[in-house]
Amino acid sequence: MTAQLLTSLAAGVFIAGAAGYMGSLMLSRRMALAADPLSHLTLPGIALAMIHGFDVSLGAFPFVVLGILLIWVLELRTKLPMEALTAIVFSSSVAIAFLFLPVDQAEAALVGDISRTGPRDTIASVVASVLIVLAVWRSYSKLVLVNVSEDLAVSEGISVRRSNLVFLFLVGVIVSLGVKIVGGLLTAALVAIPAAVAKNIAKNMRQYAFGSLAVGALSAAVALYHLTGLPAGPLIILVNTVLFLASLIIAAKR
Amino acid sequence: MAAAEPILEVNDLSVTMGAQRILEHVSFAVERGEILTILGPNGAGKTILLRALLGVLPHEGRIRWAKGVRIGYVPQRLPYIKDVPMSVEEFFALKKPKTSRASTREMLAAVGLADELRSKRVGDLSSGQFQRVLIAWGLVGDPDVLLFDEPTTGIDVGGEETVYKLLARLHHERALTMLIVTHDLAVVYELSTNVLCLNKSSVCYGPPLTVLTPESLRRLYGAEVKYYRHDDGHGRNHESG
Image (cartoon, chains in turn yellow, orange):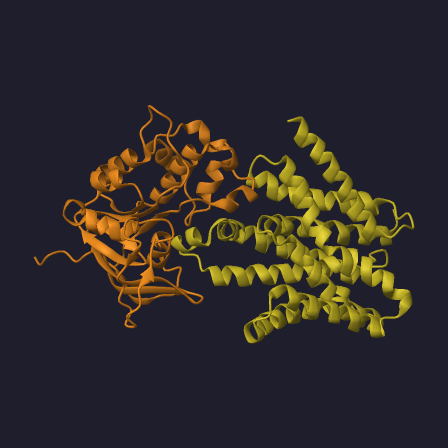
């Protein structure tokens, strides 16, 4: 096992695990697909990072935050439907990215490229992933209660507005991390599929949450174990898809 | 000692959502230990009233709870709860602070549910069981007041204690003040100290035997008098019902 493989594997497994865990919350809020437009939005940031040679997640994060803020402001000011705003903001963002993104780096930006991650980026990704898992773990029950019923959450003294803000921030971080391994196109799958797999099998919330984490991490491990020359990002998603089909069969046999 | 202050005082409460006025100038008070039923047809604003009392909705007018009062809330239904695989015990653990296993057991027993239910998935419960779980959930932390929104489903199977018998029992055992939304007149007569007839505004308010007259019920449900005089300052007649 080469050092490069090891660093790629570490970054991939940790990020995919954290994304799966976070995905279990996003899926139960019917928000897993929100990761899709948000990750498209990061493309200009990814392009900048690639051109100037810094960490893709660092480039992506400000764009996610900008996107979330922009949508809020536009919605308040214009009263256009959210869908229209989302379409406008996100497609403009993709269009801008392709104005200056070098063609030979387009693939890496769209579906990710983790095969050349350096040790420093890897350490940063692993630390960020662990922190996000801890942050999600701490507020998991609060966020689930808000998902289940805002009224019940309020009756428990939970500030719904604050929980939503925390949730959006966590979504922003996980999308920024996710684009590094699966690019601007596939991040929604990275958060949605592991949770969907776990939901098919889990008997309770603990199994569901940690199952999502495990499925995410496992799919990255399987996909990255042999750097076959095939792009790693799409491979991770396909392994996820296979696991999902398997979970359907298991669920049907019960 | 002066007369105890009411546990809840509502003055001139109005709620507007979008362009629609849902509640208009509603006033009432609830004493400690009282059961207030809130009666009205579908869409009369009963659930909205409970949510306003919880502090979830922006409103005009004044809602004043007695100091330090603990409120338990039993919602009508939780459509999103099946989106998360969750055991009954885990559902209780979502409470702040987290409900202990012993207290989950105690509450399940209090509403007449078997202990084995703890490890069952919430999504797999029958609607009657789920209703009881929601009541038990509302009772954790020993609230002073229970807000109960009538279930549309959750019909009890014959032989079991009905939800309303259960509420009456809990009222006695725990000295609870209760606000119960219902559209069942039998429940109103059987349980309530006072009834608030609600159809956007307060149609009648007081002890059920006194205020529930054929006339007030007609005004409440609008069945026989389809057009009733409703003074909104413009001298127009409004359709009701």
